[in-house]
Each structure stands twice: as C-alpha cells, then as structure tokens.
Amino acid sequence: MKMSHYLRQGKSENYQDAEDKGLLKAGEVAILLSKKFNTKIAAKELEPFATEWHHAGVFKSSAGQSLRGRKVYFFSTADADNISLEKILANRNKAANKPLPDTSIVQGWYTQYFRMTDPVTRRTFSKPFIGIYKGPANKAPKGFKALTDEAFSIAEKKRGRELKPGEIPDFK
Image (cartoon, rainbow, N blue to C red; front, side):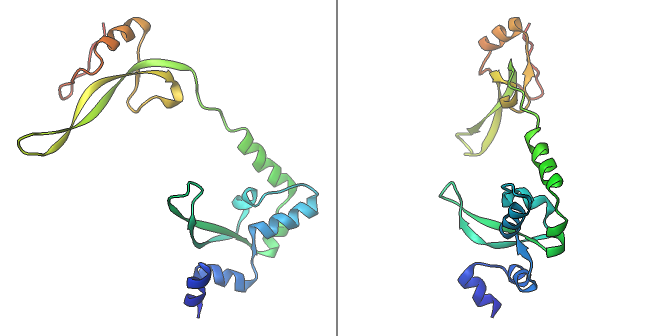
C-alpha cells in the first residue's frame, strides 16, 4: 500500500509514517509561529530546530537539468511550542554575522597540472607546470604561494614552464 503511494506521490515510507504520526511540517510550523509572534518566519529558518527529516521524492533542481532529492523537516507539536522567538532571532543573527570572504588582491604561483597523452602507449598522465595567479584571496587556486612584486614579475616570465618531479621553482 505504502509503496504505491510512494510511486504516486513521491514520498518515502518514513515520510508517510511521520504524516501518520501527526508530525507538523516546517512550513506549517512557520505559519503557526508567524501568527504567534506576529513576525514573518520562513520554514528554512526552522531547520536547525527540527525533530527529524525525510525525503519527499526527486524533483528538478533550480538549475533545471539535474534531479535532486528534497528534504522535508518535521516537528512534534511539543517541539514546535518550545521554539521561542529569541532562538529564531539568534539563529538569524548567527547567519547574518557570518564572516565575509577575504577579497584582498594577492599574487603568486601554484603548480598547475595538464593531462598529457603518451603518443606511443596512449596512456594519459598529469604533468606539472608553473601557473601564476593574481586576484582575490578567496578565489586563489589550491597550492597557491604568495610572491612579492619583484618575484611575481620573474614568475610571469616562467609561466607555463614544466616542473620536474619534486622541483620547487626559484623566483629570484
């Protein structure tokens, strides 16, 4: 019986059991708390306070191409009553006070790998080369090492040079 419901509605058995127990969904709790506190509360803000969550099937993602599973958060009525406005606001402030990424401009070098194919054996392998980067610190590539202006100008001239195994280039 439940399997046929799953095929029709896209709800897992645990999801159906939670509905049968009378647990409230996050959206329903958000509506109740919005009325109770006279403040707009989104269901997404209540996720940290949820008792449990279950899959609600597979749907198209916002990107459009791929399929993604959706989580539905459930609350018992007692847990929904224990959520205070102070807890919700504290959770909002914690999300708002998240540190901003470091966007200062940095310059330096990193080991850049390219896939190469041996023409005889047709085997592919990665070869290391010198790559340079100048831009925001939060977007720097993996293995990035900062350089001074003088050393960076030398590194620009050596960009794309092959590195031997274990070699660390000298930019003096």
